[in-house]
Figure (cartoon, rainbow, N blue to C red):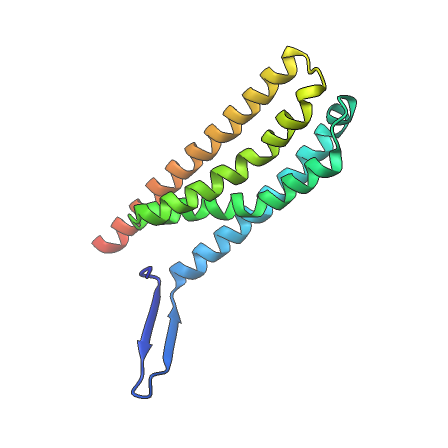
Length: 159
């Protein structure tokens, strides 16, 4: 159980759950990250709409997949970071798989639906660059958060 949640049992077997400021901060940051990713997904959908429709892809299917996977992707990325800060590699791995599947699902739809669309080579390159760029940004973001979280934990332990 994470250090930020303390469960104590009283004499009658009831649980008293105390949520520390650290758990509250993690929850706030996770919710903020989810909202940011969903907003980004909506903007990306509006930007990509015309291009996807031009090649015959169903924008509503793409949008549904993109929005439905945005939340598990965002939560997964946030939990990977917090799990690594806590040095819980098992949880980090499980959340990493969730984030990876959620990240790649919309792109897989474009590749699958576009297999008969005769995309120009440039479209495939743009798709690959977007995947590499957004994926690399997620990895960089997690690494930065882990370093910051571990530094805060170390500073709190020294104080």
